[in-house]
Image 1: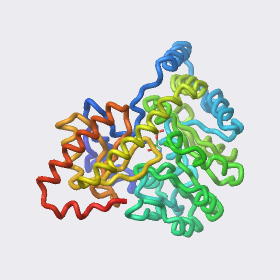
Image 2: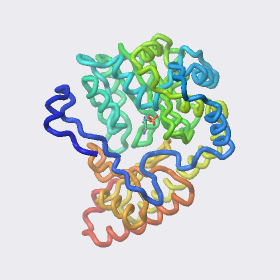
Image 3: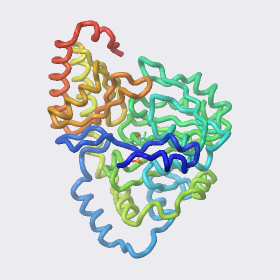
Image 4: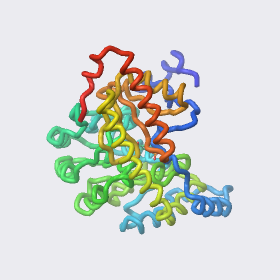
Amino acid sequence: MAQLSSRVRALMQPHLRELDVYDPNFTPTRINLSANENTYDVPAMTRAAIDAALAATPTNRYPDPMSNDLRDALAAWHGCARENVIVGNGGDELLYNFLLAFGGPGRTLVNCPPTFSEYAFFASLTQTEVADVWREPETYLPDAEGLVAAARTASLVVLTSPNNPTGDVAPLELVRSLCEACPGLVMVDEAYGEFAAPGTSAEPLLAEHDNLVVLHTLSKAFALAGTRCGYVLAAPDVIAALGAVRQIYSVNVLTQAAALTAVTRREDFAPTVATIVSERARLFASLRELGEHVPITVWPSEGNFLLVRTPDATRVRARLRDEYSILVRDFSYAPGLADCLRITVGTPEENDAVLAALSALVSKQAAASAAPSSKEVSHV
Ligand code: PMP
């Protein structure tokens, strides 16, 4: 896509003039492990049920603006009322609406980088100030004291659990402390929550804290990234505010029908989620073992992805793409993530392929380069 011209930059709102068009850096490859999608598609029987629901959905009428049938199904699942749920065009829309409704000039969002870049992006669009409380640079665990101190004067806090791209879950004690400290709202983004150990979700804390907001998506465990459907659980007045700022028809009829079918048949997805979780453990163990021989560091993860550090990661990523047709995400450019790649956990065959390719590439590069580069790698 064309870049922004100086002519249009001058016409844009001053705080938006530095923006560029989002480039996902996507190249078609044999194996795509770059976007934390579910590399398993929707199970065949579930897909047939979705197709039947789509076929029965008229498209000449506008959608139900609030997706009430879907809200009811989500509420029944999560043991809450319709008033505690709002649906959006992906989690992204709900994150944007969160900043739109509750951020803005003079307001501060506490962010915990390295993390999902959309929080800072949506803060910049809405002119919300960002207070970064950086994770510990070796373990990438959050600085609990720093976060709670920053939360005391903040309007909003966002914590990702499991965190993208570092994979750790937010301790519930920390979430509780943040809810107590923050005079505004605390968002826990559980986009990858279905892959995490049972008992790690912040959802039970919703009953105790009416300033807690929990985000979910159907893009990951439910293999519906292309459908664009996410939802938020929160107190009814928070949901009402998110409802007030939303674009009324953002969740189209086909998405509502597909999501309702998937949520109603959510047990169908359990086997692939279980496979991804066990494959994550296998990939992690194999990368750890590889790290004993070649310069590779891998962090434990509760998501459907692993963060890996290896010297010259940008080159490794390019060679994975060009020589093996495997796409992973390069985070080398991101502050705090020097030489880091994020690898989505795929099918056993995809994981075997990325493991073999990485092993070959990193061994070759380690042999070719001078010894000191391996010293820079810390194993945690
Ligand atoms: N939160 C996190 C942490 C994510 O990584 C993503 C997607 N990559 C989202 C939210 C949004 O997902 P979606 O818009 O597809 O629901």
